[in-house]
Image (cartoon, rainbow, N blue to C red; front, side, top):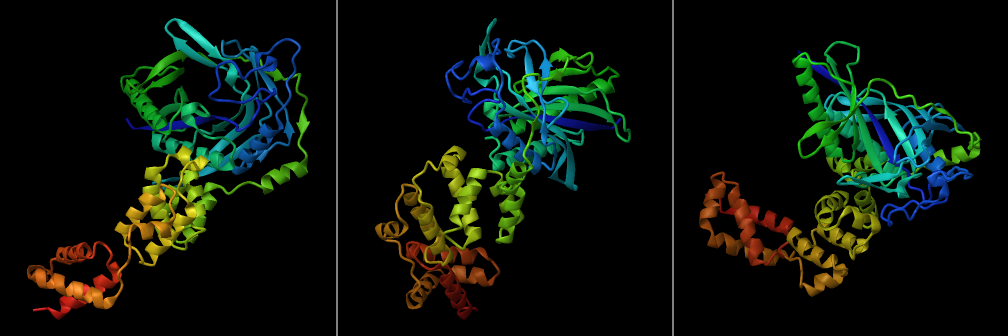
Length: 475
């Protein structure tokens, strides 16, 4: 029997604010445990929450970029449950009045662009973080109260690959906005995947399972693939699929049962009594939308309009720090394709995303532009450019490096003609091979000339002179 995979994704995204959602405690990832928390985060009696305006601004940005309808009236609710990572015994969230509804993003698939609907985007506070060691559990309350948005898709995703593309694109949008740093490995962005199977051609959903807290793009794909195999085997053997929460085990390459769900949990939601409804000023709301930064789709189109192919443009925008570097580089050169090639190869190989983001490198972009200009004008060869780049990485200037390395492009035709004649005289068999249709002979001869000139022969002029020399010696 053929089954169709049905997937919905819930993304929890920590907002890039300095303070927490309802308190003045600082937001920090790497601080000592339990040093960035105050009485409000811990739910001490007599304390009152105060809404973080910056968190609202970032949420509005995310809503608009994800094509959501924005509710200008902000209301919060209490989600009541008791768990060790929830110090107040409840979570302040937006169950009944999400700030954003009915959004979407479009993702590329093998069958063209696919429209993935977003049911809602709502604000809430994060929980504390638990660490397990043997039979002990330690709790770090630094994360408690960190501003979050939860983005809930409709069940429009049909494969592990589509899920991966959806999360990757959504994450990229949020990073370009500056809404989050998107560091999945640090928990800034986490995914819960709801997945079920149904017979192809049917409309009714199957029994779903939820895979919790996936924190990498690759694990999203692997977890879904593993769960599809598990559910398929159960259905093929006429065993029931139980509604449950599972986790992905990367060592065993399968999903592991965490707890079963017999029905919907009653969280006894009610309006948060300590935060009065807030009506956003329409002028403020409009100013946020009017001043959104450039989004990845627009940047990709800009790159293609500048002459890049779709592949190069798509690769550049996947890494915002690299894309920002490229934007600075093309201010120094008109050789856009060459600049992209260097960014996607040598720059990416020599700098981490963190170094690019923090500009923690000695390379001067202006000097890199000088080198690319010289390469584009064929004043230096590709091999010479590699040697120069090594020195530019140390912070050296282009022209000083060229002088220090004694790099000079030989373009004098009289000198090059003599070199060509010498090499042809020394390699008569290669001349015969070339005229017998062996194209590799031309490459060999060019290599000999470049070796003789110590890499300084102008490759374009030399190639033309070599072809002319070969034609003169045609049998």
